[in-house]
Image 1: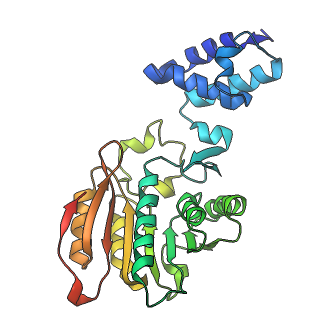
Image 2 (image 1 turned 180 degrees about the vertical axis):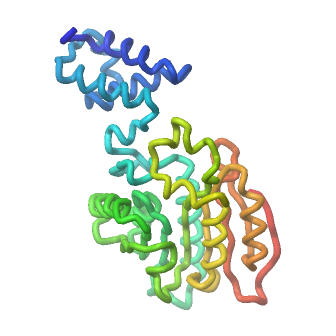
Length: 302
């Protein structure tokens, strides 16, 4: 069949995506809309609209790839985050809504520090995003606070190329991008907020072979057999690059909040607390770096 209506194409796509279970209909609708570059509503208002042979061939190819587990964002090359549209490739993680909580915490701390730092009124807040991937954290912060100085770091040149493209499209000239492993390219710089969504999956965890992660870059998912290795490294090294009163904000796995809080307190951070995402999972944990005499040993879950 060289011609097919939207209604028929939707039914065929849904059948091919049957492995998504209850989500098959939603997946089919969004795949069809993205592949044909048409609004979702068209599937309801123009169900008999005909697809030509080229459109049908593309749709079937995309459907097979999606059925195998490939994320829709890699098919379209785009993903929305914080109402901004980011370029995405298999060289970077697919942006997830949970990371918006990390952005919220960065903005909150930067705003609070701005109010308190009366002794440096002309010095903008400085933020660094470590392991930036597609750049969503640093770029979103720069978009929301144009007067802050934002830096993004990633060890992957391919990831940094995507972040550079996104920065140029969304916040041209307002994010400094550097290649290197974690703090290596930062020399002796100090920041008011250090943020990261680092790899936090055990390399032996079978979830890495599941459909949801199998297509995403392994380097961004796991740091090896110790799921906490990257998080622990950031906690240990961050004080060397935090301004007095600065914050370290970390995204982590849903079951890692207790371990991250304990490590932060052991390293000497104050006001350690975890925050829950919309699903109720502890997703972001933070701590403040203060002079020795002002540190506390609190350890709480928000």
